[in-house]
Length: 343
Image 1 (cartoon, rainbow, N blue to C red):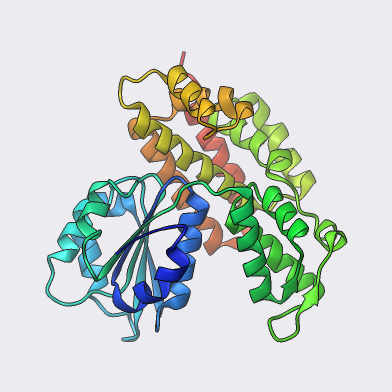
Image 2 (cartoon, rainbow, N blue to C red; image 1 turned 45 degrees about the vertical axis):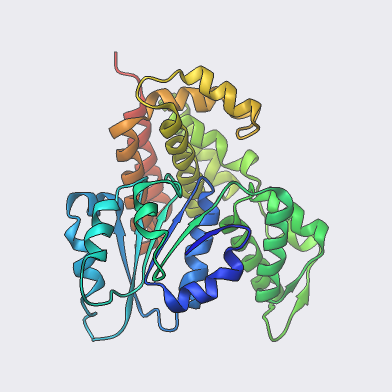
């Protein structure tokens, strides 16, 4: 089965019933992870969640099949979530498909890959698999998704507020969902007891825009500007930015760099690529300098290591939420030092 963001909502329920392997790809990382969350919701019995990274499977491709056909400690159901970069999981998926017993559901989020990748080609024509491709969304589509999320949370909002939330989240559905959940908590709203929200409620929860909050620290760290790091970390605390939301901004930028690096190739012209992407309106003019700078620093194996570092940091922060800010600050300092040009 194949899908795009246009028909994913219609196809997802049938895919969750009939498919075992879900390859969710494309440059819209937020859409990819939102789709993974939706598939998980639709599974009849998702059970225990087992997380693997693409790097894990690249080192040990047999592991995916072993995990997918084993039972949990207490014999309950399980599903596997793989956070991959590009085609890291291709060999593991090929081995998985060669097994005899049906595996548990396997969801692969690969925002650096496309529906033309090797992994996608292994799965696209199979009835027991889904390949879904997600392109960067526009404001209208994200606003519509925001309203759907709000309805589920019992928060009634109009179109104008939905668009404002979408803009504040940088068109990232995950961040928009977080804002809606905070609004529901603030209003004591639920699906069974809905409440209406207006702009004053959104202002009250202290939402910060991506431009005002996230991108200065993202650009300082990935650009290797260690002299700015202390000030940016202090500003992050003063603004009260959520550490996980900040990390998600780094993950989105890493996915964007991976997509650009794939187009650039080993000997491409970085400046020409950035100009072409800007002309096609796939990047904003204000990001041009920073993306060009970061693309020179983060390519090939270095970019793979960056993705692995961010994945590991994400896990550590979720496992120890009380120390999330400290873990984030330590991780970002390490990344900034790694990005600093060597004399």
